[in-house]
Length: 147
Image 1 (cartoon, one colour):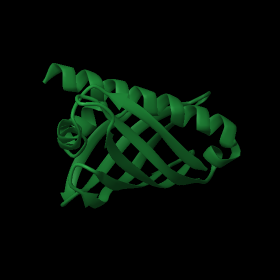
Image 2 (image 1 turned 60 degrees about the vertical axis):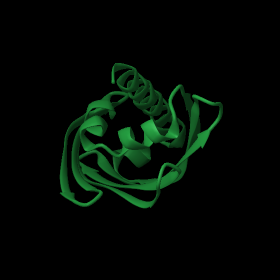
Image 3 (image 1 turned 180 degrees about the vertical axis):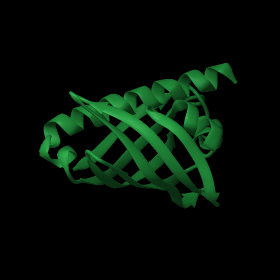
Image 4 (image 1 turned 90 degrees about the vertical axis):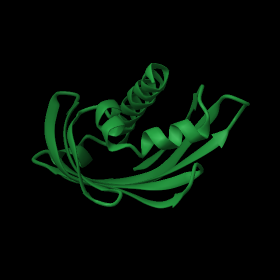
C-alpha cells in the first residue's frame, strides 16, 4: 500500500526536526501510542492500540529512524505485530521550507499489511492512514505552539 502526502506547519524546519526526533514528543503526538521506549540510538520499542473500523488491535514492535540528513530528511522504518495483522512500512520524511516561517512536511513510502488488515483492503486502510496522519500533524502543530 502506497503512503504519501504533505502537511504545512507554521514552524522552521529546525524546530520540526527537533520535535520529530524527540521520543517524548513522538509518544505524545502519535495517535494510538501507549508507550515508546528507547532500545538503541534512533530505535524504539513501540506499543500502540489502533481502531480500524470495527476492529481494534494492540500492536507491538519497533520504530527506527534511519538515513538522517540534519533538518532535511529521514526514513521511518516501522515493524508492528498484532492479533489482527502485521504492518511493515518504510516512510520517507522530507522537510521543505515553504515560506520564511513555514515548513512543508512531505512523506512518501509503502506499507505491507497482513492478516485482517490486508483483508480490509487498500481503500479502507488508505482512509485510516490519512486520518492518522492528519491527527499526527495537528498534534505536532499543537505541541509546537505550546513550546
